Image 1 (cartoon, one colour):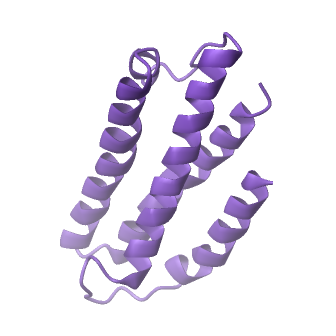
Image 2 (cartoon, rainbow, N blue to C red):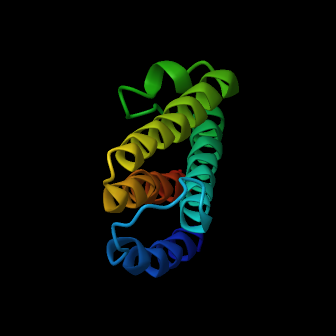
Length: 126
């Protein structure tokens, strides 16, 4: 159910991101705020489902970059998900904004949030 809801949200946001004109705008406008909130929600879902699977089902984190963080419990998971997943995405998007690449600026959070949310949803099957 969560996967379907996130997929619908992404599909609703995608046309406005792709069709957005490349014009100067403040970085924290309404569209970027929504896109980054979507990314935070996806990272939160993935964090919760990963820690749940690691705790209850004796599974292993498959992402080699996330594994050292996720295996350290919630502290490591938060550092990875919000430090890299949210902070890194924010930094790359802001870099695109400063370069005047506004379509790339807006699509960056979607490129990160979509697979993160799908994988987070898949974790619940364990």
